Image 1: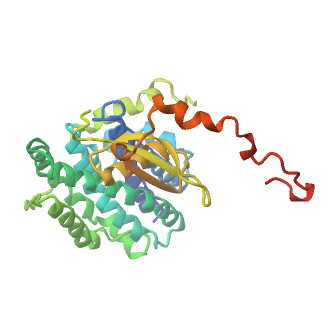
Image 2: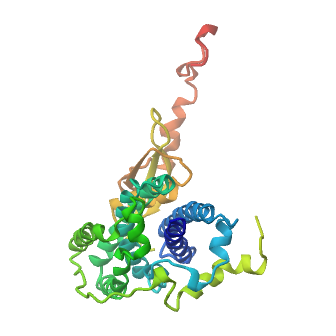
Image 3: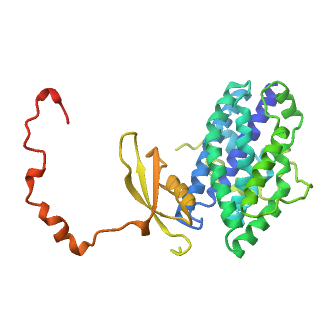
Length: 250
Length: 95
């Protein structure tokens, strides 16, 4: 039980940390100053969320690992984030679609986790929900504008949607850990929020006349530490300082 | 940054209830909704605001700097318009 709760909390923490690092990659590189700040604002929200979750996971584990130890001293195979979130910033449209798919999901996820019997997770969910609501609004408005913008922007977002679609199935998987905790009223039944997620995606895509992909084959493995080749490249700059100077503090 | 596709907007923030909106700066955005989001992201990162207005910069009618003598100088010698000649009883405190 404690072990399941640790595993579950670490998944959520890794999601927030890896997405944050990916978004931080836009710092100084976004299309214009306003969007540069918007994306890094979202990154900071994710860091805040990751810290709370790692700190809680460290307490559950009870081996003295703090949030830094859990974030910076683990290797690829120990990370259990969703594969979607480690996908590269190849193009602004990729970053927007990644954010949109995830925010539409995680808003519903936090709303459900707010009634978790685990008070700490419920409290973190209540805080994260408000942030996710804004992330969803921001990314959804961009989806509409890129889809409904120029020929160039439309072709780029269509490519991003097509590519990232196969990473969306993983969000709704329920393995043994999640199922056992859901039965105790602690975890969210992720499979149950899929219809609402589909509705949210359909509504926004309809505004921009974008088609929802029909592909049903989905990538999986992130929750078991099986990642794409990209994760190592996310971790290297993120973990460099703690690896080179173990225990360094500001 | 093309002004044609992403025009300039002026941002006004109200910091507390009872205060008025004050000009905070400007941003570029494609339309009103995106302008509101950009204003939120750029100008309210440190808890500055409870309310935001965005206004297309092109909609603002500004006074002509070359007319400042005509516009503003005549008020310079009308000190009686300042409420500085009233004795305020101490019990009133700050007004």
